[in-house]
Image 1 (spheres, helix red, strand yellow):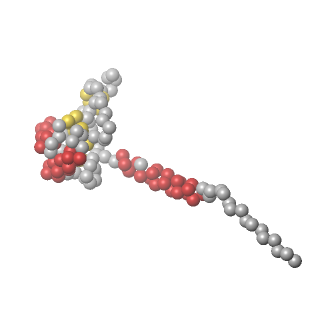
Image 2 (cartoon, helix red, strand yellow):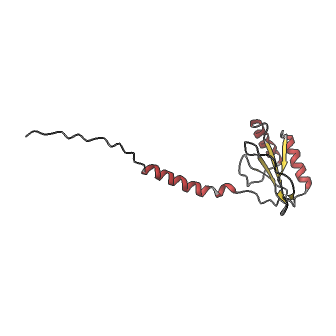
Image 3 (cartoon, helix red, strand yellow):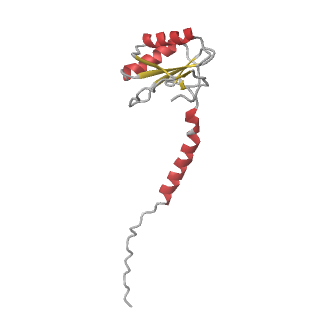
Amino acid sequence: MARQRIRKRPIADINVVPYIDVMLVMLVIFMITAPLLNQGVDVELPQADAAPMEGEQQDPLVLSIDAQGRYYLNVGGDPAEPVDAQTLVERVGAVLRRRPGATIMVRGDAGVDYGRVVAAMALLQQAGARRVGLVTEPVEGGG
């Protein structure tokens, strides 16, 4: 009795199930972390009828000043933690050394003393800032 060899042909299909599993896990991770990225400092912005600034390629550096006059910076550490004046100058200086033409936006609460905003702008100038803008909310009904 002669034995015949049966050759098995290689399977040319790609199993995509593991890729779908990875994609779904990543989707869940992004869905959970996306709301956490929108945390910030509760600041009541003053209203003004002004045209918006032209956007730049990179995200601007944002300095927020709350009603109690505390500073918050959106880079270097937790943006929800207040920073002192020295830390503010150091962090802004470090960012400006990497991105010399970076725009810095100041979000001052409507209830904060104007002198505190001016002091913040002086600290930004001390750090080497050349472009500083003030963030306001548009006047309702204005156009």
